[in-house]
Amino acid sequence: MSKPALLRLHRWITLVFALPLLAIIVTGLILSVEPLVQTSGIGGPAIEAGRVVELMKRYDPDGKARGLSINAASQRITLQGTNVPAIDLSSGEAASTGSTLSDVFLWARFTHERLMGQAWLVTASTLAMVIILLLGIVMGLPRLRNTLSGWHKATAWFTLPLILLSPLTGLCMAFGLTFQSGAPPAATGRPLALPDATRMVAASHELSHVISIGTRGGRMMARLYDGGELRAYAVTSSEVTALPRNWPRLIHEGNWSALIASPLNVVTSIALLTLLSTGLLIWARRTLRKRRPRADGSAGAAVVGAG
Image (cartoon, rainbow, N blue to C red; front, side, top):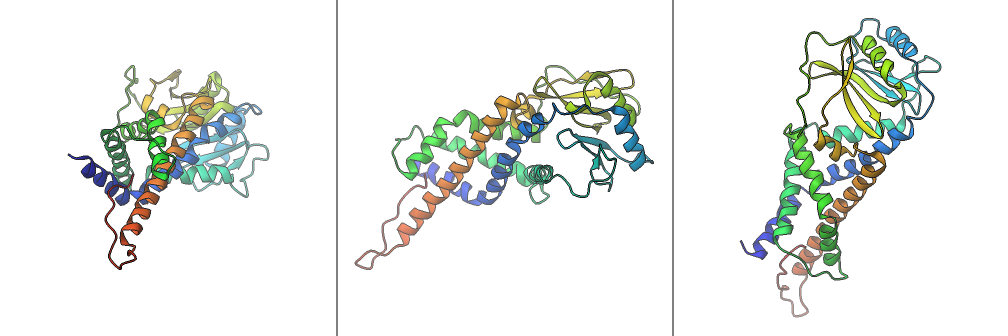
């Protein structure tokens, strides 16, 4: 396929998926800072398991909650799967207002994973992003100039490992590829009750380091920060065991090291946003230039390429 044909395909795939890609990239940028926000709060006051269990039983006496999320920075817990608002650990009362930042992260995650409630649209857009990047690579090394097109190409080539790794790991997550070093232990029997699971986790880890505890895949699991890394643990009545690392998820979410991976994800999101915006600007400028009449009244010659 000729370079003009590759360029035309590169351009039209971008135009078709421009709006979904914009939403995915912007929400990805928001989520890039979440690990830094989470780790900044884990050094706060200790959280007592007895206090958490007491509030759990007060607000969910029938045990309908499917999970528990802990915000150590604001000293609040949330019972997932119930209509109960966030609960203040100090006062024991339902918080009158939610955590604005937590709400933003929650909205960003839902939009990033299920754009307009459609997970397939996110997967299709992510696949389109990979194709767009690969088409750019196939077109070969560019001539770097101090122009809009030059900056577009320079951004793509100088950040290529980051901007290619991000959608590729996203696709791995979408298709269930974990590249785990070992098989996770099989879930056996009925999952542990949430209050009991909370006590088990608290016996071996600080609850202020815990992000969530809940049922997933037929087992009780906890997600907590251990040495700056967000790890998943299986919780049973006898032990709390670290699960094999899901490397695509760790890399994509920047949870393998908040202090390093989170800033890298911010750079990646900014680079992708720059590529999308400059690519659309290049296309718009060239489209307007083609339609602009010449002084003699004839239409201008067509210009090939959109970056």
